[in-house]
Image (cartoon, rainbow, N blue to C red; front, side, top):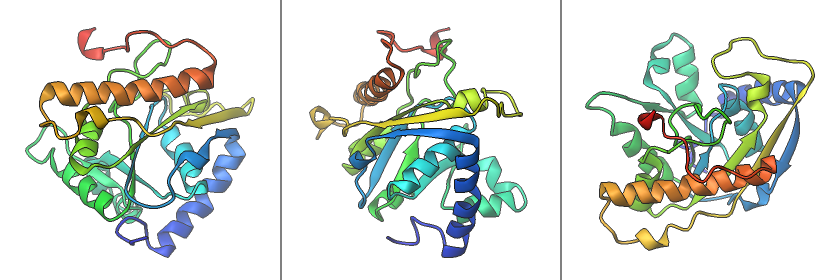
Length: 236
């Protein structure tokens, strides 16, 4: 795999040495269907977002299943001394919001996909605000990238990171030891959008299909029925 889509051996080793033991220490694991993750080629991984802890825990899962996760991170992090260098060295992609540079993250993501990278997307854009922690209405970036590049989208649902570190809190709840559950779904079928221009309606429908696939995996993981209509923070 190209080093454009994977860190140098130094940074990869450093991240693995820190993250894997920490992950094993903090949570038990219930990982399912990692075999559904293609081991090679460009890949979009669409996941729900519950906690500031889940990118680390989910990255451990993806790494153990053969993929280095390329994460989209706020551009401001790249300006923080040392942290910015570390984030960039780990192949993260800066996300620019509210500026003329907003499209740059998608352009860089498209190049990483062409190079064979696996990009971890949180289509909701932030941790869910749904009171019962179901996925919200998603933003269209992942769908646009998938349709324009022809890259397959794999839905991944997880549960348990919010028990370790609830959204908005800075101190983890270490005891009792939590279980981090993950379930990988089959590729999202976006074939009905093939060849269509990326108009707003097309992107919204494709995004809804991606989020529905993530939600279906989460419903199976939780053993509960998901709401018929996803939470929409814009309408609240």
